[in-house]
Amino acid sequence: MNSIHRNIGADAGKTKENIAYLRQMLGELRLVAKGEGADLLCYLIEMAYVEAGDIQSGRSRLSPRPASALNSRG
Image 1 (cartoon, rainbow, N blue to C red):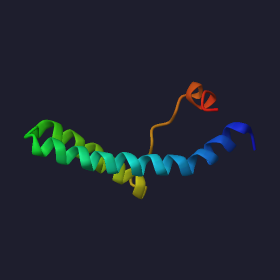
Image 2 (image 1 turned 45 degrees about the vertical axis):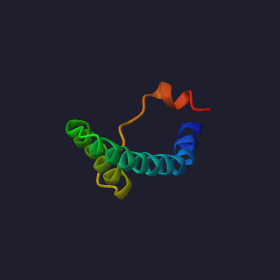
Image 3 (image 1 turned 180 degrees about the vertical axis):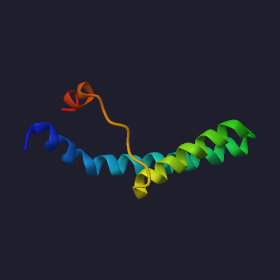
Image 4 (image 1 turned 135 degrees about the vertical axis):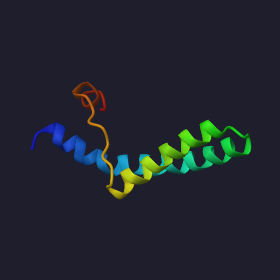
């Protein structure tokens, strides 16, 4: 197995943690936007929240990373 595949596997757990964190923060941001009456912002944040949930559940995939991003991660 080459080093790129090892790095992707090692990052999978961290990616799941990051998506969970993003989803949590988006939920909080949505409440702030709703409280301020920022309807469009609330809608956009909610769409990102739903997408994060879809990624967590496997209904949606992450976008592929360019090779340059994989090489710069450590």
